[in-house]
Amino acid sequence: MLGRQASPWLRRAALAAAAIGLSAAAAACADAEEIDDDTSVAALTAPRTLAIDEDPSVLVEHPDTLRALEARGLDLGSMLTGAAMDDNRAFAASGEGRAIISAIDADVAATKARDRQVGVGMRYSHRAFDTSWLASSEGRFELVLVANRMDRRHKDDGACGEVHLVYRLAYSNRQATSRLPMTLMLVYPQAKRGDCAATANDWLRMPREGSAEAKATALAGGPLARLGKASKVELNVQLVRWPSTTRQDMGGHAEYDLRVLERVGGQLVPAKLENTPRTDLTEAERAGLAQWVTGNLPQIAAGTASIPSAYLVDQAISASPKGLSRGANRPFAVLFGKDGAGLGDLDVARLGGIASKTALVRRLDTMTCNGCHQARSIAGFHALGHDRADMATVNALVDGVSPHLHEQAAFRRRDLESVARRSATRAPIPFAERGSTYDGYGAACGTGDVGFAAWTCGAGLTCSDLNGDDVGMCVSEGKRQAGEACEESTVSFSADASTDKVSGARVKACELPNGNAGRCVRSGGNPGGFPTGMCSGGCASAGKVEGEGICGVSVPSGFNACIAAGRPFEGCIAGGSKQYRRACSAAAPCGQDYVCSAVANAPAGVGACMPPYFIFQARVDGHLVGD
Image (cartoon, rainbow, N blue to C red):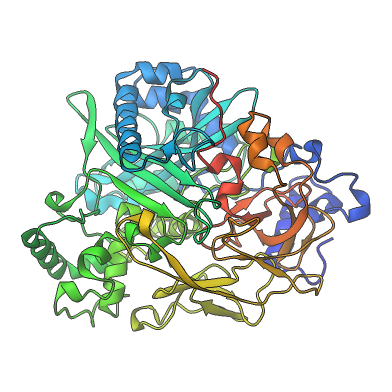
C-alpha cells in the first residue's frame, strides 16, 4: 500500500486511480504474498487503466480521443493524401508516401556508405531502420498527438500559429503488436480571424471533461475543421542504433534522422530545417551568421528568432544518449564554441533570461531541431504518444509525452489565455531544457556558469555534473536513491556523434527504499545499457511503490537471442528478475535518457524509469516485418 513514506505525487496517483474505478488495493499495489507470478506472460500483458489529464486546448493526447478523431477523418491517409489508408501498402503507393520513403531510403543508404557495420537486423552491430515497414500490410500510422501551436504565431503574420498532427508508425503481426521509433508530423497554419483572440477562445472552449467521443466531436467541428491536406511534413526516425555491448561507455548509441518536406506544385519536396545551421559554413558564412546573432539578440532571448535559410541544413542528426553534452546536437557550439568565443564581443547583460554568452549559445542550440529533440526528450522524441490500454504492459509507455513538452504545454496554456484576453504582453518562449519552475529530480541545473545560476534544485536535491557540462541534473543529496543516476563522467565534444568518447567515470553510492545498499548499474558491462548509471537492487513485488522507488522487471539473459529468433516480445522478457527503479508519472518525470515505462500491478498512471532501448517499441532493431 502507499503509506506515509510515499511522496505526494504518488498519493495523488493513487487517489486518481480510485476515482476512475479502481479499488484502493489495486491502486496501491498488492503485497508480495498476494501475487502468484508477477513476471509471467499473463502479468506482463494484462490490460492497463489509463490515467491521463488531457487539456485539449493545447494538447490532445488521450488515445481514446485520438482514435475518435481518426474515425472522424483525421487519419493520416485523409490528412496527407486525401484518401484513407487501410495499411502502409496504400501509403507507399501514394505520391506523398513515395517522397517520404525516398528521403528516408537515401539517409539509410548514406549511413551504410559511411559505416560498413550498419545493416538491418540484429546480426549487425550497428542496426538500421527497416524501410520495408513503410510498404507493409502489417504497418500503419496512428494519430498520437494533436498540438495547438498558437505560440508559433511569430512565424507567419498572416496566421494564428500552427496546428500539429503527430502520427506514429505501428504494426501488428505474429511477433508483437507494437509501435516503432518513427513519427510523421503534419503542420498546418491556423487561419487568422482578426487578432487571433477568436481562434484562441475556440480552443479554450474545448471540453476537458466528458467522453472521448464528445471531445473529438467538439474538436473536429471546431479548431480542427477544414484543415485539408497538409502542406508540410516533419520526419523523425531512429536511423540507426548501436546496442550497449557495442557502445559500452555511452550505454548504447542512437541517431535520429530529422527532415522536413513541403508541398510544392502538388509534390512533397525536401525543405530546410528551422533554425538549424550547417556546420560546414565557409568563413564568410560563419561571419554572416555571427552578425545575424548580434542583430537579433532580443528575438533569440524571446525564442522567436528565425535564422535566414542560406545558413540552414536540409537534414540533421540528433544523437542519444547524453543530450546537449554532445556536439552533434549543438551546431552553434560547434561553429562558435560552447562559450561563444567565435561570436566576438556581445553585450548580453540586458537580455531577459540570458546572462552569459555560454547561455546564449545554449539557447541557440536548443532552438535547433537536433538540439531541441535531445533536450529532456524521450529518446530523441517529444511525442511518442501514450500507449493504448490494450498495449502489452511490458511494451507500454506510461507517459508518451516528454518532460520538455509537459512544461511547454503549461506555457502554451498561459500564452493561449493571454491571446484570448488580447493582452499586449507576450512572455518569452521558455528554454527547451528548463521550461518552468519544476526543480525536482531530473530537472536541468547549472554547474557553475552564471548564465544558469537560476537553474537550481529543490529541497533535498543537488546538481550532479553527469557529463562534464555547463548543465547538470538534479538528484538526491547524499546517497542516490533507487533508480537515480549514479555515474558521473566527461563526454568529449565532436560534431561527429560516432567519435564521441566518455572518460573519468565516477560512481556514486546509493541506497534502496528497504534501507539496503544499492548497486550502481553502469553504462557498460553486464548488463550495461544504463546511461549515467542507475541505482538498483533486488525487490519482492512487481509494481509495488516504496517512497520514490518502484519494483520493476529486469530484462532476462538471452533476451536479444530470443527476439532475434522472432519469438513474441512478452515471452522473451517473462521471468526476468525484479529490481528497484525510480517511480515516475507525468507529474514526476524521469531524468535525461530514461523513459517512464509501464509495470505490472503498478497504480494507474505510475511507471518505472528505464533506459529507452529496453522498451521494444523505442528501438529500431528486433521488429520482424512479415511482408
